[in-house]
Length: 560
Image 1 (cartoon, rainbow, N blue to C red):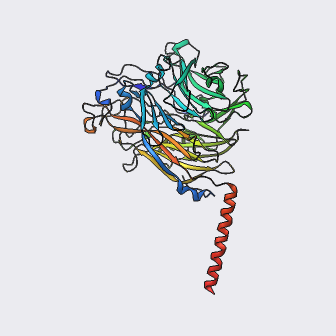
Image 2: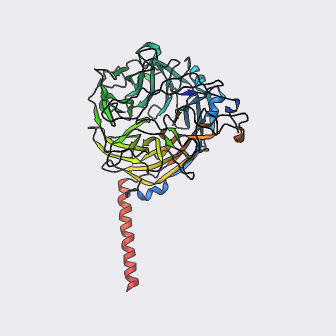
Image 3: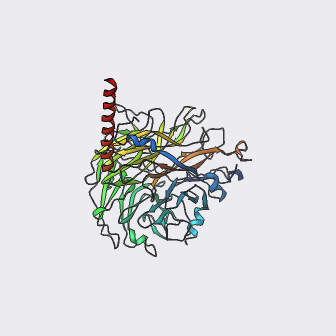
């Protein structure tokens, strides 16, 4: 969910899930985001870790940013009267275009040069597909096999979700859509919150966090989760439908509740071998991830899906709840909401390994919080859920959060994230990325250092409150970011993340503006070095040996 900015004062609240994790107890996820109506002026419109040795090491110098460009900004969505906090940063790359969604807007870019080809409000996009409107929380992916786009969003009613599928690989061409109930409890007064989207060989997987309406037993109580599994061909047919889809509702917080199904459930992209789809989530009970399977998946007919056995795993290192992110501001030094430990970005299976990231706060040797967030990555074996490797992207000085990743067929990984800190020299919220290869043991091996993609314009981000003052309201960040693999080039990774734009005031080209900083998104194309074929490595090693032998003979001759 989100906050909307208009020309009136704050009058309303809506829900959001998220809080600190407490080991051994049920996490209090019924913590709601503020959806505030706060001051808005016309000026809100468009205006002026250690490196490990690896055989891939020689290739690290080839990592570089090929392209970077401005994505959807808060000034953009305000120009179409859709001004929300946070952006819910989301995008994906296709054959010739990059498509981005944010709360309030949809944009398409030419991936050759970053030129924006179109921008419209999210309402206009969905209304053009025959839907009544949209309420944000959008996701978008490009399916290489089908050569088509698929997008997901709240419908006009937040108990429902709507899906759009393009007819071709052209995001500016024709689309079709369908709608379904994401959470059926309490009727249309409920919320199927934080919808996730995954594509497998056989299915489309959508997960939601389910909340009751404020009038039902308290203020937006968390009820559990719903997992919706839809046959892939049902959605990619001439007329998209959810026919044959199966839903699994898992109740929370009751005597018969099933805590092992987790929270913010993510389908694992690329799974589906043998009719089995994998699901990954953060545990509701404590500091752990959980994974389970859906079996009986068929891309061409109705599903006979059943839930497989679930498994909690703590990974290799404990963690605790996340605090606010730092920034170099005297008035607002720690207001950035880094969210909880949920897995907010896409999860991928490649070569039998499942790769995921989420934001956590490690503990020290005696179990005390280190008070700095990190982006934690995990690599697990799909067949038996064994945790093969785990690591943290962090340094104990900055806060690292909002991570996302993608993996190519060679096991090359790009992990992108936000980083911020207290230092005036490098503390502004920035978007960065790192490159890894996958070792034979599942360990991620880093190549080179951090790759800086974008630095915020402001060192004092706070949204919906007066510039130069103390932040008012919850400073929600994210809620997610995305890394996607180019369908035309397995060594091209595309990153979208959030950063802080300039304050909305006259000094920054916004006459009459009184608000604080505004959010924006940034898109980058990162190229990694190709991995040589095994035969090429053998030839290179043999060649190096021959060169070495020749050099030794030459040195011996000179010595004589």
